[in-house]
Length: 184
Image 1 (cartoon, rainbow, N blue to C red):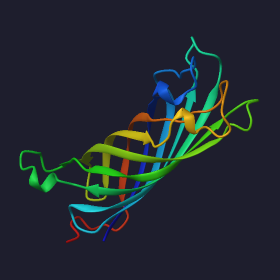
Image 2 (spheres, one colour):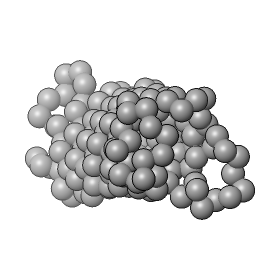
Image 3 (cartoon, rainbow, N blue to C red):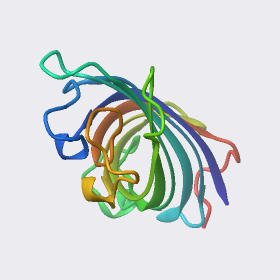
Image 4 (cartoon, one colour):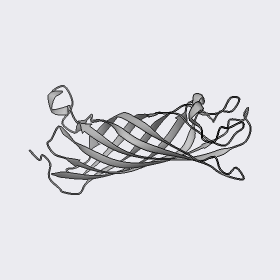
Protein backbone atom coordinates (compact mmCIF):
# COMPACT_ATOMS: atom_id res chain seq x y z
CA UNK A 1 0.00 0.00 0.00
CA UNK A 2 1.78 3.07 -1.22
CA UNK A 3 -0.17 6.28 -0.79
CA UNK A 4 0.83 9.48 -2.59
CA UNK A 5 -0.51 13.01 -2.70
CA UNK A 6 -0.14 14.70 -6.07
CA UNK A 7 -0.14 18.47 -6.65
CA UNK A 8 0.61 20.15 -9.98
CA UNK A 9 0.20 23.46 -11.77
CA UNK A 10 0.43 24.32 -15.45
CA UNK A 11 -1.34 25.35 -18.64
CA UNK A 12 -4.15 24.03 -20.80
CA UNK A 13 -5.27 24.12 -24.42
CA UNK A 14 -9.04 23.67 -25.00
CA UNK A 15 -9.84 22.39 -28.49
CA UNK A 16 -11.99 24.68 -30.64
CA UNK A 17 -14.58 22.00 -31.41
CA UNK A 18 -15.83 22.41 -27.83
CA UNK A 19 -17.01 25.98 -28.44
CA UNK A 20 -19.93 27.29 -30.46
CA UNK A 21 -19.07 28.35 -34.01
CA UNK A 22 -17.01 31.50 -34.25
CA UNK A 23 -15.62 31.41 -30.71
CA UNK A 24 -12.40 29.92 -29.42
CA UNK A 25 -10.05 30.23 -26.48
CA UNK A 26 -6.47 31.39 -26.28
CA UNK A 27 -4.05 28.62 -27.25
CA UNK A 28 -2.37 28.81 -23.81
CA UNK A 29 -4.54 29.22 -20.72
CA UNK A 30 -3.46 29.50 -17.08
CA UNK A 31 -4.05 28.01 -14.57
CA UNK A 32 -4.41 24.29 -14.86
CA UNK A 33 -4.42 22.84 -11.32
CA UNK A 34 -4.46 19.14 -10.43
CA UNK A 35 -4.81 17.63 -6.96
CA UNK A 36 -4.94 13.91 -6.35
CA UNK A 37 -4.49 10.96 -4.07
CA UNK A 38 -2.96 7.76 -5.40
CA UNK A 39 -2.65 4.25 -4.00
CA UNK A 40 -0.23 1.80 -5.57
CA UNK A 41 -1.24 -1.80 -4.89
CA UNK A 42 2.01 -3.11 -6.37
CA UNK A 43 5.07 -1.29 -7.63
CA UNK A 44 3.63 -1.42 -11.16
CA UNK A 45 -0.07 -0.52 -10.74
CA UNK A 46 -2.57 1.37 -8.64
CA UNK A 47 -5.50 3.80 -8.65
CA UNK A 48 -5.72 7.57 -8.52
CA UNK A 49 -8.60 9.87 -7.69
CA UNK A 50 -7.97 13.41 -8.81
CA UNK A 51 -9.50 16.83 -9.26
CA UNK A 52 -8.60 19.26 -12.01
CA UNK A 53 -9.42 22.95 -12.43
CA UNK A 54 -8.79 25.02 -15.56
CA UNK A 55 -9.74 28.53 -16.62
CA UNK A 56 -10.09 29.51 -20.28
CA UNK A 57 -10.26 33.00 -21.74
CA UNK A 58 -11.23 34.07 -25.24
CA UNK A 59 -8.67 34.59 -27.96
CA UNK A 60 -8.35 38.22 -29.10
CA UNK A 61 -10.14 37.36 -32.36
CA UNK A 62 -13.14 35.86 -30.54
CA UNK A 63 -15.95 37.46 -28.56
CA UNK A 64 -15.09 37.98 -24.89
CA UNK A 65 -15.66 35.12 -22.42
CA UNK A 66 -14.11 33.27 -19.49
CA UNK A 67 -14.92 29.72 -18.46
CA UNK A 68 -14.13 27.63 -15.41
CA UNK A 69 -13.65 23.97 -16.29
CA UNK A 70 -13.56 21.43 -13.45
CA UNK A 71 -13.20 17.67 -13.61
CA UNK A 72 -13.01 14.61 -11.36
CA UNK A 73 -11.42 11.35 -12.58
CA UNK A 74 -10.78 7.88 -11.23
CA UNK A 75 -7.71 6.56 -13.04
CA UNK A 76 -5.75 3.35 -13.34
CA UNK A 77 -2.01 3.99 -12.91
CA UNK A 78 0.59 1.76 -14.55
CA UNK A 79 4.30 2.28 -13.94
CA UNK A 80 6.46 0.24 -16.36
CA UNK A 81 9.69 1.78 -15.04
CA UNK A 82 11.15 -1.40 -13.53
CA UNK A 83 10.91 -3.08 -16.96
CA UNK A 84 12.72 -0.18 -18.65
CA UNK A 85 16.28 -1.05 -17.63
CA UNK A 86 17.82 1.83 -19.59
CA UNK A 87 16.33 4.53 -17.30
CA UNK A 88 18.39 6.04 -14.48
CA UNK A 89 17.39 4.86 -10.99
CA UNK A 90 15.68 8.13 -9.97
CA UNK A 91 13.50 8.37 -13.11
CA UNK A 92 9.98 6.93 -13.40
CA UNK A 93 7.48 7.13 -16.27
CA UNK A 94 3.98 6.27 -14.98
CA UNK A 95 0.96 6.21 -17.29
CA UNK A 96 -2.55 7.05 -16.08
CA UNK A 97 -6.01 6.79 -17.62
CA UNK A 98 -9.62 6.63 -16.56
CA UNK A 99 -13.17 7.95 -16.70
CA UNK A 100 -14.53 11.05 -15.06
CA UNK A 101 -17.02 13.86 -15.13
CA UNK A 102 -16.47 17.43 -16.39
CA UNK A 103 -18.21 20.65 -15.36
CA UNK A 104 -18.06 23.77 -17.53
CA UNK A 105 -19.23 27.07 -16.03
CA UNK A 106 -19.15 30.40 -17.88
CA UNK A 107 -18.19 33.46 -15.83
CA UNK A 108 -19.56 36.97 -15.92
CA UNK A 109 -23.10 37.83 -16.95
CA UNK A 110 -23.69 34.60 -18.87
CA UNK A 111 -26.03 32.34 -16.89
CA UNK A 112 -27.86 29.09 -17.54
CA UNK A 113 -25.07 27.73 -19.70
CA UNK A 114 -23.37 25.33 -17.26
CA UNK A 115 -22.56 21.96 -18.79
CA UNK A 116 -21.89 18.56 -17.20
CA UNK A 117 -20.60 15.64 -19.26
CA UNK A 118 -18.47 12.48 -19.06
CA UNK A 119 -14.79 12.43 -19.99
CA UNK A 120 -11.88 10.04 -20.46
CA UNK A 121 -8.43 11.15 -19.36
CA UNK A 122 -5.11 9.71 -20.49
CA UNK A 123 -1.66 10.92 -19.60
CA UNK A 124 2.02 10.25 -19.10
CA UNK A 125 4.26 11.59 -16.36
CA UNK A 126 8.01 11.92 -16.04
CA UNK A 127 9.13 11.72 -12.38
CA UNK A 128 12.49 12.53 -10.87
CA UNK A 129 12.86 11.27 -7.29
CA UNK A 130 14.48 13.79 -4.97
CA UNK A 131 14.35 11.20 -2.16
CA UNK A 132 12.14 8.25 -1.10
CA UNK A 133 9.21 10.48 -0.21
CA UNK A 134 9.31 13.31 -2.73
CA UNK A 135 9.53 13.55 -6.50
CA UNK A 136 9.08 16.35 -9.01
CA UNK A 137 7.27 15.54 -12.23
CA UNK A 138 5.92 16.80 -15.51
CA UNK A 139 2.54 15.57 -16.73
CA UNK A 140 1.08 15.59 -20.24
CA UNK A 141 -2.64 14.72 -20.28
CA UNK A 142 -5.48 14.68 -22.79
CA UNK A 143 -9.03 14.95 -21.46
CA UNK A 144 -11.49 13.77 -24.07
CA UNK A 145 -14.99 15.18 -23.58
CA UNK A 146 -17.52 12.43 -24.31
CA UNK A 147 -19.98 14.91 -25.74
CA UNK A 148 -20.51 17.24 -28.67
CA UNK A 149 -21.99 20.66 -29.31
CA UNK A 150 -25.23 18.90 -30.26
CA UNK A 151 -25.48 17.76 -26.64
CA UNK A 152 -25.86 21.29 -25.21
CA UNK A 153 -28.93 21.49 -23.06
CA UNK A 154 -30.44 24.02 -23.61
CA UNK A 155 -29.22 24.52 -27.20
CA UNK A 156 -26.83 27.45 -27.51
CA UNK A 157 -26.88 30.18 -30.05
CA UNK A 158 -24.07 32.26 -28.59
CA UNK A 159 -21.05 32.19 -26.32
CA UNK A 160 -20.72 31.06 -22.81
CA UNK A 161 -19.97 27.37 -22.50
CA UNK A 162 -17.40 24.76 -23.32
CA UNK A 163 -18.40 21.23 -24.21
CA UNK A 164 -15.28 19.48 -25.44
CA UNK A 165 -11.73 18.23 -24.97
CA UNK A 166 -8.49 19.76 -23.74
CA UNK A 167 -4.78 19.10 -23.40
CA UNK A 168 -2.87 20.00 -20.22
CA UNK A 169 0.81 20.33 -19.36
CA UNK A 170 1.63 20.60 -15.67
CA UNK A 171 4.60 20.35 -13.31
CA UNK A 172 4.29 19.32 -9.71
CA UNK A 173 5.21 17.32 -6.65
CA UNK A 174 4.39 13.74 -5.71
CA UNK A 175 4.57 13.23 -1.95
CA UNK A 176 4.65 9.73 -0.45
CA UNK A 177 2.27 9.56 2.49
CA UNK A 178 3.08 5.97 3.47
CA UNK A 179 6.86 6.21 3.28
CA UNK A 180 7.46 2.82 1.69
CA UNK A 181 9.60 2.65 -1.40
CA UNK A 182 8.42 -0.66 -2.85
CA UNK A 183 5.13 -2.14 -1.72
CA UNK A 184 4.99 -5.68 -3.15
